Amino acid sequence: MISKKWTRAWCCVFLCIVCSASCGVKPVYASKSSQTVQSVQTAKNTRTKRPVKPAKTEKNPKLTNIKQGPDRISADAAVLMDVETGDVLFGKQADKRRPPASTTKIMTAILGLELGSSDEVVTVSQKAANVGEATLHLDPGEKINLYELITGALVKSGNDACVAIAEHIAGSEEQFVQLMNSKALALGAQNTHFGNTNGLPLKDHYSTAYDLALMARHGLSIPQFASITRQKETEIHFLEPDSLMDLRNTNKLLWNYPYADGVKTGTTTAAGKCLVASATKQGRQLLVVVLNAPDRFGDAKKLLEWGFENTETVHLGNAGQTIAEFPGSKDHISAYIEAPVEISIPKAEHLKLQTRIVWEKTGDLPIKAGERLGRWEVWLGEQKLDSVPLLSERDVVKNRSLISFFPFGK
Image 1 (cartoon, rainbow, N blue to C red):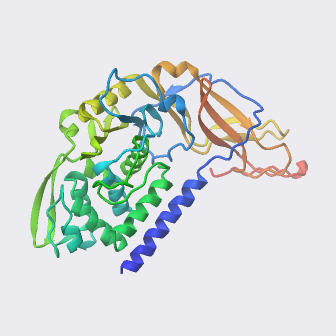
Image 2: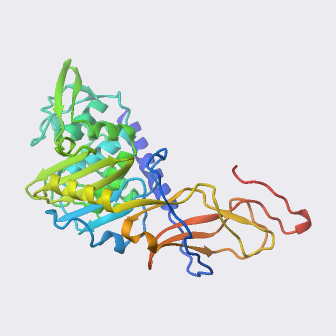
Image 3: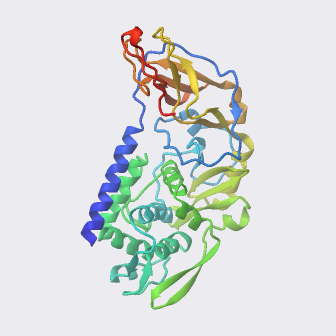
């Protein structure tokens, strides 16, 4: 049984890494044309929520080191991110490696939900029951559903629950930690290394504010994760012995800030007070990470309020929207974008937003419907924020007398 789960786990992580690599845009450096955005519309907050897009892999120093923000925050490191777009709106030592404490449990919960089934029954081992510090006070031999354990790990911050989850999914905590590191890398968290499942002090166990934001953003795209982390109070049910345990969330921001809806606290002597928190206001969700923050809840509230007040999401294009006509041919080939394009920026920077078209293909025929012709770049002043492929709307064959027209993917 364990062997089967272990194989399934590695397959899932392998596929995630492959998919992550395939999302990158191949760089082409010859710029042949550009255009200024004539009009941009602020994204409506009432839009239907789409699946979370992959985080941008290109570094954006202008945004990650942005000077604007609250006057003072106590955190040693911090990040403010738009959950839908993945854009970083504020950063303070965003890539500084620090102990993440119990924010580690974000990744443990993600893998528990992705690699296991909620109703799987977990039997608590002696090793899991022996884990100290913040715990659910698990006893050896107790039986409980996996979902209940994940809830205990996220809401009550149970260290013992994390070990029980790991052993159930991968056979041992050590093997599960390997999965955690692979998953982190697949999500773009390049400055993270986990040594355990719960964040208890360990020399080679670290992350960054930016990496934790990436992981939490992915977690929030999982409905069960989002549902668990927004709960102020809940209870979990043990199967053997048949009993209930009341839980109260360690994230006080859920009580102190009306828009808060997640995610996880963390505290150790080495890490200081840490918090990963999300909030949704008028349909827009922001995510904040503060590490080694004496006033973590105050810092989080300041950053979230600043983000809602001073930044916006700009909607630039819809999926399937025609952007331009390919200039390399006389056959009037329209080029479109496959996915919506949205950018989160400071409101004061709105007028600096531009788009540029870079054609990558020559005019040689044939051209297939859906073939990449170039890319559509989004710039804020002198800084490139995003780049999306421009695709051909139709087939064009070599012999013009035999040109065929085939709408693509409509």
